[in-house]
Structure formats: C-alpha cells, structure tokens
Image 1 (cartoon, rainbow, N blue to C red):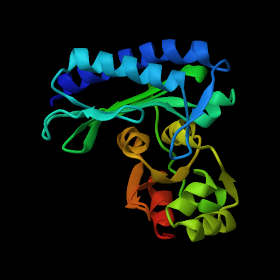
Image 2: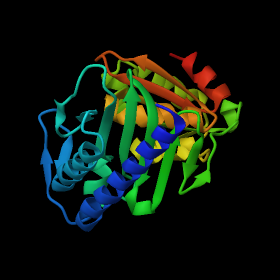
Image 3: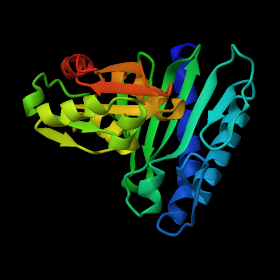
Image 4: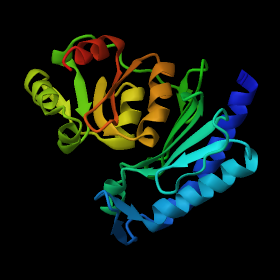
Length: 254
C-alpha cells in the first residue's frame, strides 16, 4: 500500500473510532459487567463498539480480514489479505470501574506487520495515529518517544504483576521494581499512549494478545522509539517499548 492508501485507511480507522466513542461514552460509569471464561471482564460497550468498528471497516474494505477481541476472526478474509486488528475497549477493568484510562486500539496489518495504528482515549479526548513511514501524532500534532538513556532517572511503566506471572516473567518484574526507582503501573492503552508520547520513558507489558499489541508496535517506532517483542510462557506477546536506549537495557533483563 502506498502513502495515499495508508492515509485513507487511517481516516477510515479514525471514523471507526469516532463511532466507537459514540457507543462507549454514554455507557461509561453506567454499564453492567459480565465475566468471560478467561476471567476478564466484558460489557455491552465492548460489544457495541466492536460491532460498529467492524461495520465501518467492512463497508470501506470488504476484502480485508478482521480480528477482534470480542468477535474473533469470523471475518478472517483470504490468508494474504490485509487484516484489521481490533480491541474495542482496552482497559475494560478501568472502564467498568469508572476510571477514564481506557482506549480503543486499531491496527491494519500487511503480512502480519502493522502499517496503520490508532490508540483512541475517548474519556481523555486524545487520539494517537501513525502510518508506516509517516510519523506519529496526537490530535494532529507530532509526538515522540523519550530519548532518556538512564534507568535511574526514568519513569518505567509495567502492566499488571499477574501478567508477568502468566508470562513466566516474575523475576523480570522483581528486577525492574528493584533496580528502577520510578516504576509506575500505568497499564493498557493509557500506558502505551503516554509512552509513545514521551511522558513515560519506557514500558514493559507482558502476556498480550495481538489486539493489545499491534497498534503500539507501529506507533512506538513511528514516534522515534523502539519496540521489541518476546513470546512468554503462554505463547502470548511481551512488549518492551519507548526510548531506544532504555528498551535495549530492559531487554537485557529478560
């Protein structure tokens, strides 16, 4: 896909996020919670947002595959087709507890590599968008990852400790919290967005599904940072991203 095509896809992704916001925000702090078989929460807002995202993407790109957290890959498309990866609400725990640190994640992949990425934070009014080779923006303004190279003076965020357990990375979590003075638990889409825009210097997030990781893998690199992936004990994705120098140091801890 050329630059014009990628920009067009990004505009469609933004339209999908606009429509998802319209499903999510009226239900914020006023929604019932259910629990899936894997123990994670889900709400009517998750399902409604994914449905409208899928409908928007399907209308614009009928030949593209779709993979989403709530409705799987029922619309997978041909194996060689571009594929959209959808997380309608990343941070459902925050959403259903009335905490405004949740977001929608969208990525378009070609041959399993992300070429368009969006993190939308509806309750904060922030949207991060990138296309391959086009840089990264927040609400239309360029943003950049941190350039910090000193772990002792950097903010490093982690996902939930239980996810390090699931990934077989408990020693990594303990080492980070022991050796890095400023460790913060800014999780999910919010933590990813703040790392992409340099407020957080680097982040380690473990035991992720494709819909948790795909957008960030592109956004971090387009924001001038680094993003390294590892596979954890359950075969899921571990991400280390942010400042290039810090990512290198954190990867050495694995």
